[in-house]
Length: 76
Image 1 (cartoon, rainbow, N blue to C red):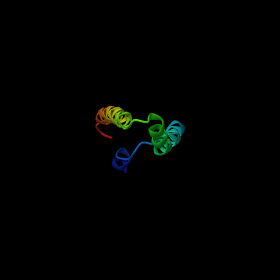
Image 2 (image 1 turned 180 degrees about the vertical axis):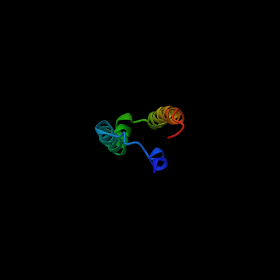
Image 3 (image 1 turned 90 degrees about the horizontal axis):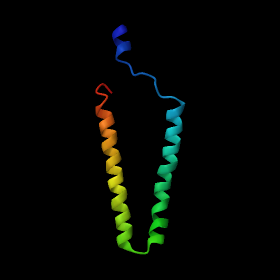
Image 4 (image 1 turned 45 degrees about the horizontal axis):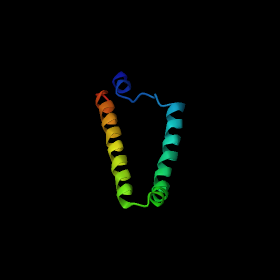
């Protein structure tokens, strides 16, 4: 029985994690509605493409940070 307890997941998610999920969901919903408004304000398709490229590079940097964080905890 003690071997089963050692291999179980720890319950460390709490209120802070729930709030972070709610904020992230709200921001994520904004991502679906905002690009059309931004494209309407820019008037130049090169600026629109540049914004998408800049946003993509920003997301790639975030993915790199998350991958570093995930590999720093080898048992996760």
